[in-house]
Length: 151
Ligand code: SF4
Ligand code: SF4
Image (cartoon, rainbow, N blue to C red; front, side):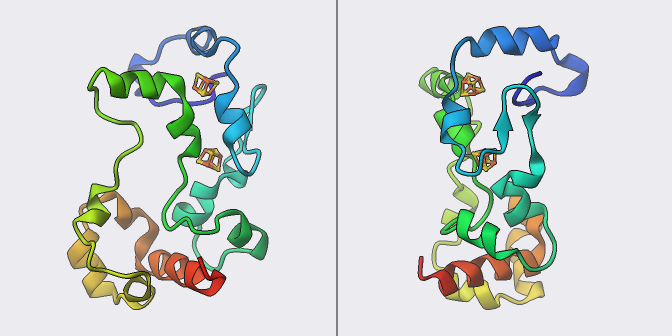
């Protein structure tokens, strides 16, 4: 089973293609801070920091607050260490792990600002960006969590 499915379903090659592409590499497995990746079963979304910082609504349990320390929106450590992504970057292909240009365009915002950003301002700044995915309350929660953790 592939660890990642980054290719649209209709054009996805057979699973064997992914397995052979990984070879003996285990970089993403070794790097994942929460053990969310398993060579037999792929990604367990319930263990992934991206789930807790982006998809989850409501407060984050303490164990995940600790695991996601300092992470405002998602994780992507597994993507950053993948040699295929590094190779693509060297060839000048678009990065799988974005450089978070969205946030750098709002660099004047501090964590304290994000922790109290109201819904209208969040919508104005981030409505058509990936950050919209966590909703205003999710962004405030994440920023607050980092501030309270002293990161
Ligand atoms: S995004 Fe982070 S927590 Fe999720 S699988 Fe990748 S390394 Fe693990
Ligand atoms: S880091 Fe990339 S190549 Fe290595 S096992 Fe993970 S997905 Fe496969």
